[in-house]
Image (tube, rainbow, N blue to C red):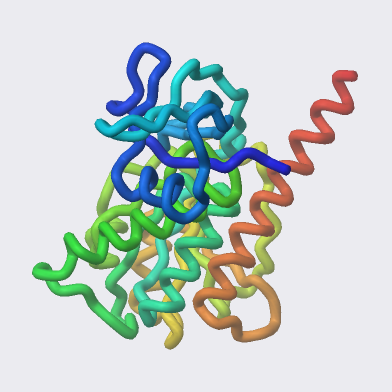
Length: 252
């Protein structure tokens, strides 16, 4: 049976001892009913993974005697820029994108976005989204948490220079060419743009092309936004891992 796993921010790990946050401590003690001396894993959300022994004290719950666990993050940084859709579906995207190794997630306000998040609600929504990716990372054994940005208007996103060194793709149902990723073409990372349920507006497609994005199709069928997001990430990671495997075999 695999060890139970808990998230502990890096600032709560000092000198081989981790102090569990209140929610993680509650889950360990009251839900899982683990005891002092039990061995568990922790991860810091920044790529660090450890295992050690539980020490339950009145002052809190600690994991002591930490030993490093070798962790592996995706070979190619992937940024998912996805149009906002209905909350439950967008949260599903967050969860599955985390499991598939996405490094950053940028919610987009597009012309046909189904929802928007008011300024008053952004803080609460980001906390909820962070919680979702934390739980997904915990489950899939990633040690780095994806960074979730505040929602960005699509024109502002396109004008940003943050990802200018990455390969940038807009997945677009009307594109003439089927997407066939070539891992050698994006050593600095990949940005994937996924539209809303109503699809990209023609003007947005032209804006994206002008900003350096290539447009590709995922096939002959019209996919739901959440399906398109996960399909695109899965295709990309398959090609990246296949390329790495072939490279490793050729050196053997």
